[in-house]
Length: 389
Image (tube, rainbow, N blue to C red; front, side, top):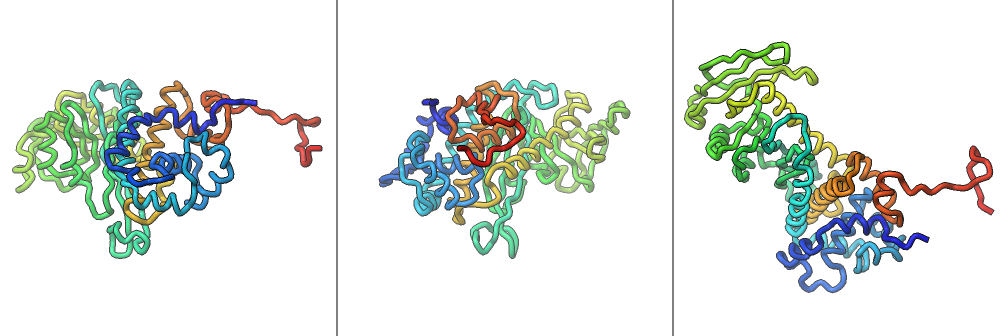
């Protein structure tokens, strides 16, 4: 009999629990808690994310079915739907937000040398937001429209990985542009954005901080061309220009020159005009940088499809934020495991394998590369056994 750790416990061994306890103490998460600690809550919620549990009742039934293994999973408190619901309602969501940032800090160096399709030594970020629709009658705090609620995930994604660098969770009414005020610009880094982030005063602030931006221009932008540079039209480029803004407000908000690169994205059959404050890179690299912004769309699609981010276990703002941050931490944890074990499989393949093997006692590396290797003995290989006498 295999006397090793169960797979879920091996996964949790990658967590820096000393850092988790620091986050708990920072917000007094275990103050006057008798039996169900913040770690118990996190492990239950992480289990729900890994295995795709649909509700608190689903979590309770599943974990109670394996009651004898809860101790080996690290869960010391009694698992019940009401206890877990109370924890999600009352334990400060910032505990799990801070811990997710700790995991992000561990993951980013592991992916620092990965390529994202553009040969560039600079750090490249994509900034975008994604809306998660909510029922306004159940989530009255999530203001969005008159009869519709929503929360927004504003994400700054490091394209090497891709690993989220920063995440802000707001209600649906908060626009994209104000998030630029929360950025701490990194000198020499590139920030790739869609035209929803066009605000020339804020973009000029990025430029003054010696950071670079690549943003899609709006069709009604008023400008004057100063120089035109030759381009190879066979590559999809149409023009590479140095311009100044001439609008009554934009000229004042951004008094410096800008670079305008017009190219055709052959994959999506789109004609795109990008603005940047970088005049050194070839125009084709600028075009490739903007096209790499699509990775953040894939990130949003991935976490919405494979993590529990569309249906929530609680209706309060604290419960929703807690679930989102734990989901993000699970995503980053899977990314850490992929690098630490030097796995070639995709994150989707790893998550699917963990989904079905959490209570197995096989080595984690074997589960993620070869499977359990168990076979069923039968006399006739083409005949399934109905009864085993």
